[in-house]
Image (tube, rainbow, N blue to C red; front, side, top):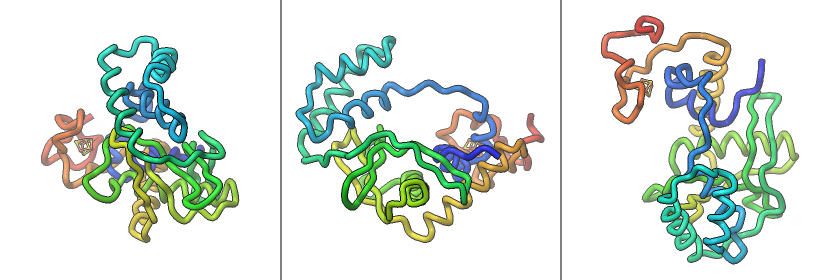
Amino acid sequence: MDKVSVSQVVAGYFCPVRLYLERSATRGESPRYTISKQVSYQLGKQLQAELLWEEVTAIQPDISADMREFLDECVDACKKKEWRRPVQTDVQVGSERFGIRGIVDKIFADEPCFAITRSSSAPPAGVYTGDRIRIACYALCIKESLGLSAVTGLIEYIPSGTTRLCHPEPRDRRAMLQGIHSAQRVLAGEVPRKPVRAPCTSCPYEEKCLPGVQRFSDFM
Ligand code: SF4
């Protein structure tokens, strides 16, 4: 079986039905992510909004000019902090043992030895559950692929210009395992059972998750 990506692990944890519906969809990169990623590459150097916007428009020629405001906000937020320089970016890692793979955004020379880049604002405190699962996955993959003891990871919340440290707890690794197993079943073609909390108001598939329907296959 092919390895499951870290984003599929997170999706499998939160909702296997949504993962099932989106499993063959090709989603383009969001403009927010393109901007956050380019800003992140420049952290630790002098941030130049004009230069960054040139790079962003080279990567996404059709990006709306309105997104320039978002880039400026990210640059302003990130200028307020000192940033470490990574020794390498975009490193492919994986775990044969657990059947997962991903690309870790940054590797550093010392602890915490890795970081992931997010295009979302930071939560008021701590780290989002999905990001705790991401860090748990990458810590496992980095240890197996690179032989580094990655106990904790950093999350760069670019629009907030901040990083949060995440030390995965047993509950985060349990969530990771749950997500791996759930995603593996979906990608093997198994039709998932609808979560009991459905429908969820922030989901584009809300209408498909009608009350009283037990299995996803019942309403296909
Ligand atoms: S409405 Fe909720 S349960 Fe249904 S697909 Fe969306 S996230 Fe999943």
